[in-house]
Image 1: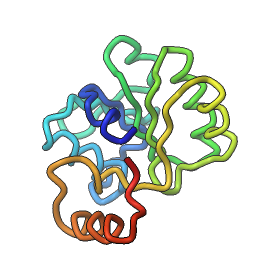
Image 2 (image 1 turned 180 degrees about the vertical axis):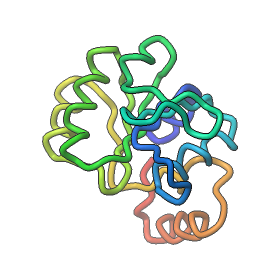
Image 3 (image 1 turned 60 degrees about the vertical axis):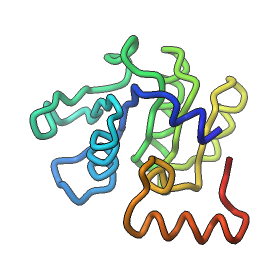
Image 4 (image 1 turned 90 degrees about the vertical axis):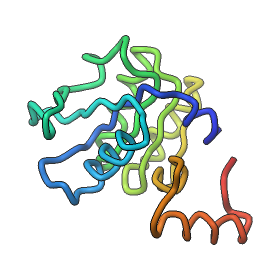
Length: 145
Protein backbone atom coordinates (compact mmCIF):
# COMPACT_ATOMS: atom_id res chain seq x y z
CA UNK A 1 0.00 0.00 0.00
CA UNK A 2 2.71 2.50 1.02
CA UNK A 3 4.99 1.37 -1.81
CA UNK A 4 2.13 1.72 -4.29
CA UNK A 5 1.51 5.27 -3.08
CA UNK A 6 5.15 6.26 -3.56
CA UNK A 7 5.29 4.68 -7.01
CA UNK A 8 3.05 7.56 -8.08
CA UNK A 9 4.85 10.78 -8.94
CA UNK A 10 2.06 13.35 -9.38
CA UNK A 11 0.81 14.40 -5.97
CA UNK A 12 -1.37 17.18 -4.59
CA UNK A 13 -0.66 18.43 -1.08
CA UNK A 14 -3.74 19.98 0.47
CA UNK A 15 -3.02 22.31 3.34
CA UNK A 16 0.08 24.23 2.33
CA UNK A 17 0.57 27.55 4.08
CA UNK A 18 2.43 30.84 3.77
CA UNK A 19 4.29 29.80 6.90
CA UNK A 20 7.28 27.66 6.00
CA UNK A 21 7.20 25.73 9.29
CA UNK A 22 3.58 24.56 8.92
CA UNK A 23 3.50 20.84 8.25
CA UNK A 24 1.63 21.04 4.94
CA UNK A 25 4.33 23.32 3.57
CA UNK A 26 7.12 21.16 5.01
CA UNK A 27 5.63 18.09 3.29
CA UNK A 28 5.17 19.97 0.02
CA UNK A 29 8.79 21.16 0.01
CA UNK A 30 10.21 17.78 1.05
CA UNK A 31 8.32 15.92 -1.68
CA UNK A 32 9.53 18.46 -4.25
CA UNK A 33 13.13 17.87 -3.13
CA UNK A 34 12.57 14.14 -3.60
CA UNK A 35 11.61 14.65 -7.25
CA UNK A 36 7.87 14.25 -6.96
CA UNK A 37 5.73 16.41 -9.21
CA UNK A 38 3.87 18.18 -6.42
CA UNK A 39 0.95 20.58 -6.62
CA UNK A 40 0.03 22.91 -3.76
CA UNK A 41 -3.63 23.27 -2.78
CA UNK A 42 -5.03 26.02 -0.54
CA UNK A 43 -8.18 27.96 -1.43
CA UNK A 44 -6.83 31.27 -0.08
CA UNK A 45 -3.33 31.27 -1.61
CA UNK A 46 -2.39 32.14 -5.18
CA UNK A 47 1.14 30.81 -4.88
CA UNK A 48 3.61 29.18 -2.58
CA UNK A 49 7.08 30.46 -3.25
CA UNK A 50 7.24 30.64 -7.02
CA UNK A 51 4.72 27.82 -7.56
CA UNK A 52 1.06 28.22 -8.37
CA UNK A 53 -1.32 27.25 -5.61
CA UNK A 54 -4.63 25.67 -6.62
CA UNK A 55 -8.02 26.30 -5.04
CA UNK A 56 -8.98 22.61 -4.98
CA UNK A 57 -8.04 19.27 -6.52
CA UNK A 58 -10.74 19.51 -9.18
CA UNK A 59 -8.47 22.07 -10.89
CA UNK A 60 -5.84 19.32 -11.05
CA UNK A 61 -8.09 16.58 -12.42
CA UNK A 62 -5.74 15.34 -15.15
CA UNK A 63 -2.47 16.21 -13.40
CA UNK A 64 -2.52 14.22 -10.16
CA UNK A 65 -2.59 10.56 -9.16
CA UNK A 66 -2.70 10.88 -5.38
CA UNK A 67 -3.51 13.33 -2.61
CA UNK A 68 -1.77 14.14 0.67
CA UNK A 69 -4.18 15.79 3.11
CA UNK A 70 -2.88 18.09 5.84
CA UNK A 71 -6.04 19.81 7.07
CA UNK A 72 -8.48 19.15 9.93
CA UNK A 73 -10.61 15.98 9.67
CA UNK A 74 -13.83 17.87 9.00
CA UNK A 75 -12.30 19.29 5.81
CA UNK A 76 -10.90 15.87 4.89
CA UNK A 77 -14.42 14.51 4.50
CA UNK A 78 -15.17 16.89 1.61
CA UNK A 79 -11.75 16.36 0.04
CA UNK A 80 -12.10 12.56 -0.21
CA UNK A 81 -15.44 13.04 -1.99
CA UNK A 82 -13.82 15.46 -4.47
CA UNK A 83 -10.96 13.01 -4.98
CA UNK A 84 -13.39 10.23 -5.76
CA UNK A 85 -15.27 12.46 -8.23
CA UNK A 86 -12.08 13.01 -10.25
CA UNK A 87 -10.91 9.39 -10.04
CA UNK A 88 -8.15 9.62 -7.41
CA UNK A 89 -7.59 6.23 -5.80
CA UNK A 90 -4.74 7.00 -3.38
CA UNK A 91 -5.06 9.28 -0.34
CA UNK A 92 -2.67 9.89 2.52
CA UNK A 93 -4.27 11.50 5.58
CA UNK A 94 -1.43 13.04 7.51
CA UNK A 95 -1.72 12.80 11.28
CA UNK A 96 -4.34 15.28 12.45
CA UNK A 97 -6.27 15.01 9.18
CA UNK A 98 -7.93 11.71 9.88
CA UNK A 99 -11.69 11.40 9.99
CA UNK A 100 -13.46 8.09 10.58
CA UNK A 101 -16.20 9.21 8.21
CA UNK A 102 -13.60 10.00 5.49
CA UNK A 103 -11.80 6.68 6.04
CA UNK A 104 -15.08 4.79 5.75
CA UNK A 105 -15.97 6.73 2.58
CA UNK A 106 -12.59 5.84 1.04
CA UNK A 107 -12.95 2.15 1.81
CA UNK A 108 -16.53 2.03 0.44
CA UNK A 109 -15.38 3.69 -2.78
CA UNK A 110 -12.24 1.64 -3.45
CA UNK A 111 -9.81 4.39 -2.50
CA UNK A 112 -6.54 3.26 -0.93
CA UNK A 113 -6.24 5.33 2.24
CA UNK A 114 -3.21 5.62 4.49
CA UNK A 115 -3.60 7.27 7.88
CA UNK A 116 -1.97 7.32 11.32
CA UNK A 117 1.40 7.59 9.57
CA UNK A 118 3.74 10.49 8.85
CA UNK A 119 4.45 10.65 5.14
CA UNK A 120 7.98 11.89 5.80
CA UNK A 121 8.82 8.53 7.39
CA UNK A 122 8.29 6.87 4.01
CA UNK A 123 9.22 9.32 1.24
CA UNK A 124 12.71 8.13 0.31
CA UNK A 125 15.34 9.07 1.05
CA UNK A 126 14.14 9.38 4.65
CA UNK A 127 16.27 11.77 6.71
CA UNK A 128 16.59 13.29 10.16
CA UNK A 129 14.27 12.30 13.00
CA UNK A 130 11.94 10.61 10.50
CA UNK A 131 14.61 8.02 9.72
CA UNK A 132 15.01 7.17 13.41
CA UNK A 133 11.24 7.04 13.91
CA UNK A 134 10.90 4.67 10.94
CA UNK A 135 13.61 2.40 12.38
CA UNK A 136 11.82 2.26 15.76
CA UNK A 137 8.53 1.34 14.07
CA UNK A 138 10.30 -1.38 12.10
CA UNK A 139 11.87 -2.86 15.24
CA UNK A 140 8.48 -2.82 16.98
CA UNK A 141 6.77 -4.42 13.97
CA UNK A 142 4.47 -1.43 13.46
CA UNK A 143 5.73 -0.38 10.04
CA UNK A 144 2.93 -0.61 7.45
CA UNK A 145 3.60 -2.17 4.10
